Length: 172
Image 1 (cartoon, one colour):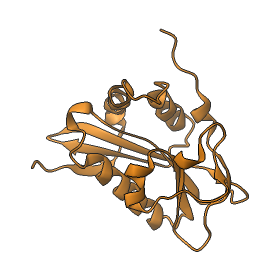
Image 2: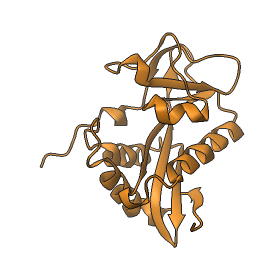
Image 3: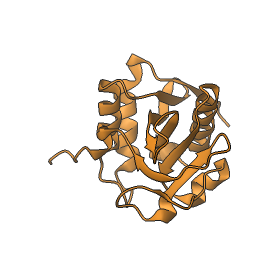
Image 4: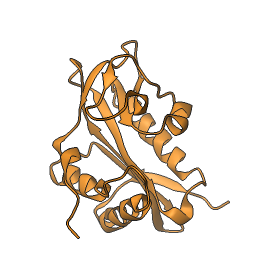
């Protein structure tokens, strides 16, 4: 198996990150094809707290983003994971998992309170994410709203993500 390096994004990675997010979500059943726009907007507004790329053979093949989020009355030190994408030809090789683990390690090093996301519990529960009573995200069924606390306080309340997540799809 070829080696995959996980590292922070650099300015030279921006086009590759955009291409990864477009390709990774093109056929995703619940995507509005805004993931690349969200990452660009977070970056442009200085709200992209953690942005990591997966590199194999000098090619960026995966990306993960984390941004600050308010969770109920807990308005600081919580982060939202997303989007995370891997080029289709590199999926199912553990790259997404490597990105998630590296990102969570970075959040812990920053002494974050925890992380929340909207996603597939079948994928994210292996990292410790779970459904928490009272944790909600407007318009999303509760079984897809997951949280991971790094301390004793479980995430509860409404998730308030950066306004970049409200971005509308590009017109064709």
